[in-house]
Length: 185
Length: 185
Image: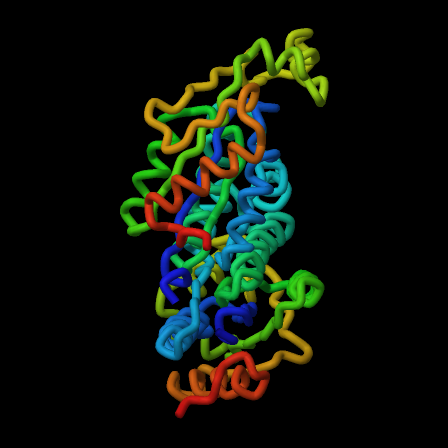
């Protein structure tokens, strides 16, 4: 029954292509396998359902991130895990979200998907960095818009060096250490 | 453990002052006392957190109601009860929300807070009907904007005839009948 009571927020942050989805999806699956109730609030899905019409300027990004955080906390206070995987580029807003989670007694675990910009531009799976460099996309994080890395993230995953399995292990290990997840066994 | 698995959506609808909050608050408390995880998505709170900037014209109202429904379903599919208490005046949108809940295998229980308009205008606790009649509030449901009552609600409560206790009993009784709530005792 302990599990049912201990909701928390698992907050992925990082630039486009840094591996937020690649890691948050298997982490979500792993947490479910361990018996937790988990909802992955993917940036794109949330934009469709909660933030249609919002743009990518700072004010609209902040609003979008705050909405994601609100829903994640609703889940957390009902014993679920709210996993968020939006770029969430601004440190102050992430810190605000941590504080709001703290205030309701829910843990907030920040996972920084770190990857050098040059690697992201080289990979450029969706071709977005090229378009951003060409000026075809405005307000693109890392190119024409800031990304403020966390100063003291709970977990750092280097997606250019760590395998997905290593990343999943690191996140789960931290959650076990924080006693948010019972040790496998 | 059955409880943990059976999330559902409990959807209150009715005009301003018809008793949505008066009933949804004690129902939420009663469900929590019976061990369910319950979140009350009050119309005003949701407007603050998810729908700031939206107005009261049909398109914006629909968007607001859809956002509430989305969050209620997120809760339901994680084994919680999403209670909504927004006016939700349009039948088609409520039916859409029922269908979306059905599609994800969650029950959708509609509670119609019924009360004759003349009684609402007479009570007028917040003075809103008077202002609406005077033209000081636009798009006011029941006065200058439509309210489409449910054709086959799961529960009807007449707030001008039923006591709050009777209303709570009726809602809980229906949830027991639908096997969404274990019988007390």
